Image (cartoon, rainbow, N blue to C red; front, side, top):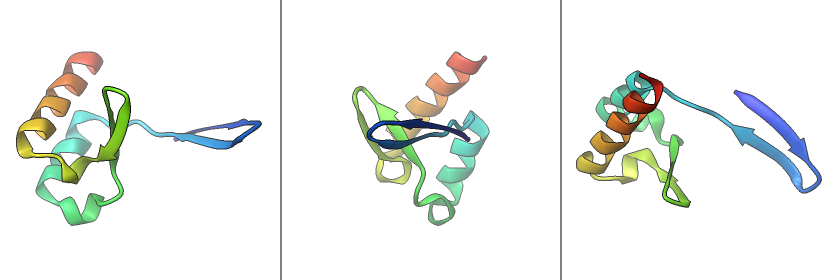
Length: 65
């Protein structure tokens, strides 16, 4: 986890890999607080449809691969 401070408060940045996202799909209650950033807004990963979750996983693999 990366933590940076700014004049408005504290900004927490956290990144996850595709494996973590896959586990979150299988065990959504264990990852209830997992948030993802999509096109300018943030939402909980487990609120998304499986289709959208799969898309985010594929993009994560592409970016990190």
